[in-house]
Amino acid sequence: MSDALQHECGIALVRLLKPLEFYKEKYGTAFYGIQKMYLLMEKQHNRGQDGAGFASIKLDVEPGERYISRVRSNAAQPIQDVFAQINERINSEMSSHPEYANDVALQKANIPYLGEVFLGHVRYGTFGKNSIESVHPFLRQNNWMHRNLILAGNFNMTNVKELFQSLVELGQHPKEMADTVTVMEKIGHFLDDAVTDLYQECKNAGLNKREASPVIAEKLDVARILTRASKNLDGGYAMAGLLGHGDAFVFRDPAGIRPAYYYQDDEVVVVASERPVIQTVFNVPFESVQEIEPGNALIIKKNGNISLNQILAPTVKKACSFERIYFSRGSDAEIYQERKTLGKLILPSVLNAIDQDTDNTVFSYIPNTAETSFYGLVEAAQDFLNQRKNDYILKNRNTLTAQTLQELLKVKIRTEKVAIKDAKLRTFITEDSSRDDLVAHVYDVTYGVIKPTDNLVIIDDSIVRGTTLKMSIIKMMDRLKPKRIVIVSSAPQIRYPDCYGIDMAKLEGLVAFRAALELLKERNLYSIVDEVYTKCKAQENFIDAEVVNYVTAIYEPFTPQEISDKIAEMLSSPEINAELKIIFQTVEDLHIACPKNLGDWYFTGDYPTPGGNRVVNRAFMNFYEGKDARAY
Image (tube, rainbow, N blue to C red; front, side, top):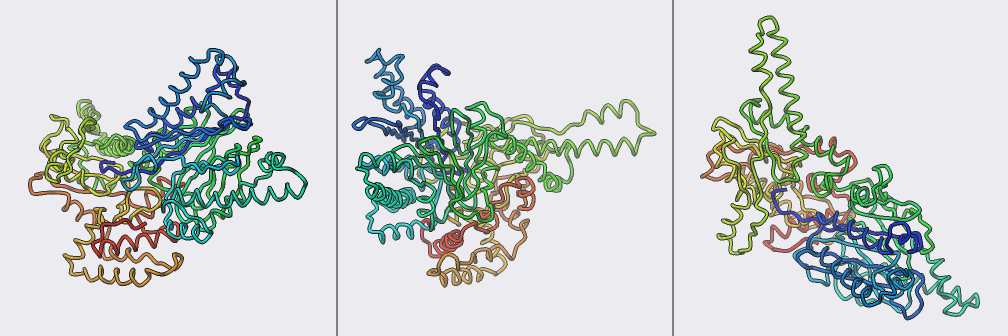
């Protein structure tokens, strides 16, 4: 994706099912779990590079011994920093106490971070906030072991204010109105309730407080706690939690918006946001890694019992399609094929844009994450060329000479690495005119591969704001002097804000929205903007379930092609000599390519939760009223 677009987080959870001595004997180290956590987090650094956190729990420790450890970092390389801190502490203890070397019991008793339950998190700074206090996992502490709660997640809630108010009505005093804190306190409230009820049962049965503790740990119903806590949640989420005594859970939203996968055997249970991460780190096949179904929680009790429990009734599955287009690593077998299919399906539109002239067309891609869809596009183009050759041969088979046939077979689809990102260049200047000049040089081009008679086709993952295209890519491509530049988006037009974890909160930042506004002005239809605002304002105090997305009316007068043409006009400039065309994937073909991830609200306005409609209307009102504010 040439425009900078951030995704909010990846999670990793490991629960060791054997005593630590087992891993020491089989793998040569009792630190097996920590090593696997490092790999799981490092393999997910694509999901967050602004902050990272790690937490661990030791099972069955004596009172007075530390059993929860946590370390967080918002350093430049946060994952490395987290594990550097962990390693430094471990090495310091081991060097100071040589007697620990082969004694796992002493290691567990005296070395922090060494335990049986681990939770990790990587994140991008949400809404520009990246203080250490915002880095997961979050910790809710209590002297009662069972009441300690560690929480990390990949989520955004659309109704944080409502959730916050519900906590206030319960008598709590939350320290801030943030979705992670609010969700943690909501789960914590019902955790406290459950522990209190179980303690009363134990007391009635004649048990003292110390005798009650293991009984509470055994009987604590995590599924019931999550069911009570999640009653009013509206958003996309995959949240993972640890309880102080050792229970663990990973809970996914009812629409399956945010991803979560798990693997289990007799040694370990592991959860991550992406399937190939687990495959690689644990060397297991594709079919051994399962998806946590929407509305379900994977619950691992302290005693090692593992269950999948339905917490909320699943709705229509609307898994985020951006996971397949861009965010997740392309090493997943399904995602790799889906991205290739996205490239293949858009070829007919590309052929129309270049007048079927593949002989005088160079195909390329930008950025590197678009490489897989580029392969699909080129394969489809090669099939088209082969069919053209086949038709020519059949038509001229009686007069075809060996020389003509040889020349015909030499014709191939032309591909080049045209754009190269300068990874070391940073746009550190904030003053607009100076910054624009820097942005223009983020990419370098390969000279000498384009002729003045050529079309240059560049495929991108998606086009969000269009800023980098306008300020950098198109200008750089024009230096190669092609006759026509065709920018191809493997994703459809992004028309609406996201509110479930992707940093696309403001309508006016979306180039498709700005293009629609320009068309409304040109055709004297701008009154539609006033009408939409009036309708949005009228339902400002409606409950979420009654809110309608009226912003769709902004796009209704125009075909997708008209909006694409207007975007091309807006992204070009007088100094660009080449003809510029912009092509977008259709929503229909997106669903063909990615049949398991049908979440398309940023393209269609069809939000999977009621809160989405409120957010898009609020975003529109902010735009109309000139408020530089987020809609949730």
